[in-house]
Length: 41
Length: 208
Image 1 (cartoon, rainbow over the protein chains, first blue to last red):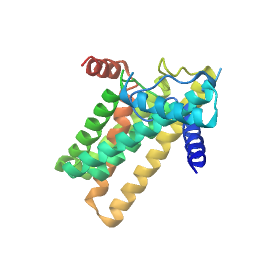
Image 2: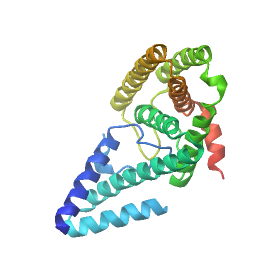
Image 3: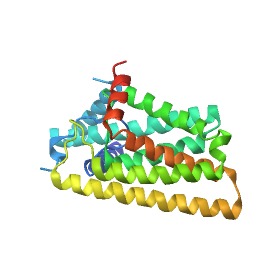
Image 4: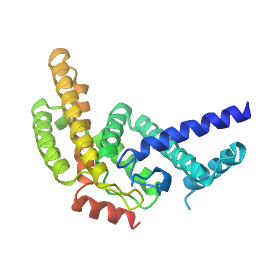
């Protein structure tokens, strides 16, 4: 159960991170450092 | 490191350890967690202060108008999540309260503001969008896509405002004019953050 919840959280946050990567800015006025693996080169 | 970043990193580390993910995946999870926490805090603060000042719907309209357009247009950034959330909340609640003034419940005034808003915004978005940040650089191809996205988003807002005007004529509900005003102000604020003046104003707030 714990592993399932962790995997679900990992999936959700990864999807959100991918959505952030497709935008110029996510939501607000602060932009954290974007992981290199998500950058479009 | 900021509290919200500490929480995100700690949460991501826990998940990565449990599921045996590498550092790249851990970073991505931390990034996504940060985004979710930022949205949750922002919306929660807007709802709480919106309830206190009696402007929840207007404040939420402003929040979503700004944030959705910002997704494509980018704009000036604060140096910390705290300043980001504080400035965002003050702007949304402040402008939402402003929308309740009788002057901005006048059809002619709202119509003029709407026309000026969209003319100005199309020009500024065409010339300046998107504005990237150092933490999130944009490739040339992505800049073209984001500019297109900004213009399309603004056009969708224009369509929504047109629908609201039609509904106002049919139903004669004053609140609809307040909502139109909020959409206009949200758009104007967001395009303001693309300009050099906006950069200076928010930069000076940042120095506190």
